[in-house]
Length: 117
Image (cartoon, rainbow, N blue to C red):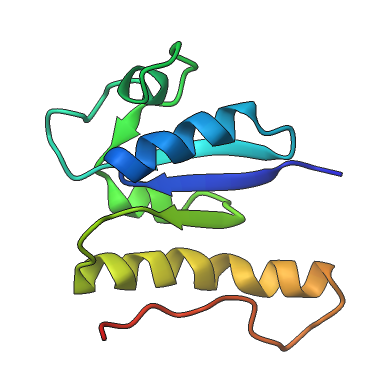
């Protein structure tokens, strides 16, 4: 089975735990780390998570991340913002059709949308 390609969205307390889990998981591959803090941009995801660097640099370039061929976006912000949810939805929508086709479920929705409560 091929590894699922994952974008980690945020690198705070929950995000760093996700990064650590992703690195050790045999069926998941971290392909991008999206951050908001300018101080974190360019730093290795491993460094931010307190583990050995592994070559994924943090970025705040939302458009570049959205264009990646990800299977999943792990959204780990403590306080959700409306524009963040829209970005997460955009990432998910671009990939949902492809995965639904692979699963033989053409035409069905394969993602949950985010909306402000």
